[in-house]
Length: 400
Image 1: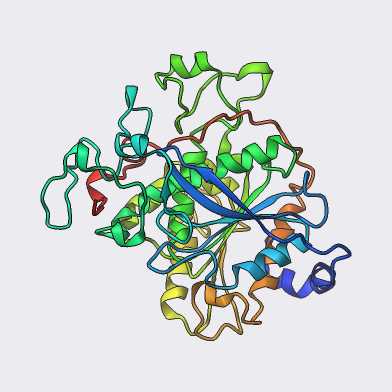
Image 2: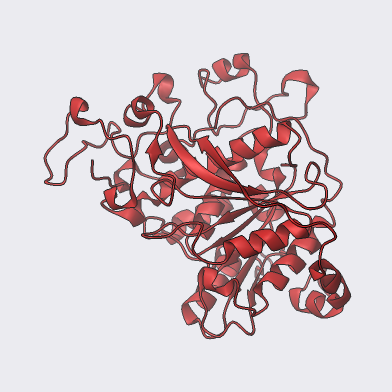
């Protein structure tokens, strides 16, 4: 029998689940609005809900809705899920992607529009990089003096699906923001969970690949200079012990697991590219278990959930394969979900939240004693999309 079977745990763990869902002794705190900056100068808007138990040592869950027109963190019952998670001992952070909801301000236009800095320490600007001439709505080139726009709306994007890789910069900024809260004693980023819907699954996997390619602690300025990174950190691994004798841990090891509702991938991310992020990052597959949920009458969601679990992460490899079976990575049907899809599975009283809590509880049992560690980051890390992760710059579209 496998060490972990969601179906068996749901049956055998009825008492545990009842305790988890019982009214908490302490009321979960109301969410607090927070803002934070990306490496390319965009101000993002987020909400932080503190754990009702021991926030300074409790893990953190990051909620990710799929980017898209009229999508915001206020759509769908993410608020209800956040409150439930907080009552059960999880800090919860959610945010609006750039160009969504309240995340529309470009706080540093100079950085945003001229991102190719010294030593290419930033990711190429998806709008104005050396491989792309910015153009206005009519298709005419736009010169530097005309580039004065200091806000970013979803309607500005020419090809929203092809712009998707830029959202990795938002995830990198969110991680940095959480690490600063970790260093202040507000939460514990030694154990991070991701819960998302739709295309957020592919974005989350891409970001995890970047997390396994950087240290969990801030390198010294000398280390950054030695590896040609200047003074600004990028998602590149620093292969030597860090200052203060800290072990050379990788950022991806802090991610305990993920749950994806009706997973999907953006049109700009090919199946081969998605698989390459996992095959090229063995530690991701081995250390970041994932649960892919789908409703029984959602044929597309079922197919994609099984695709992610069995083809991308190869949870059940054939006999003689070079990789081992993954006990905690699987596709699972929300039996009462009917034809619900994505975040519509939340707040519908079909068992989604209970399944999520059960899954997180199973993983957290082995991570509950992870202590909070000082990270020491002073700036958000920048993902070098094209160079490091196969995301061609020409795949972006923007309407200045």
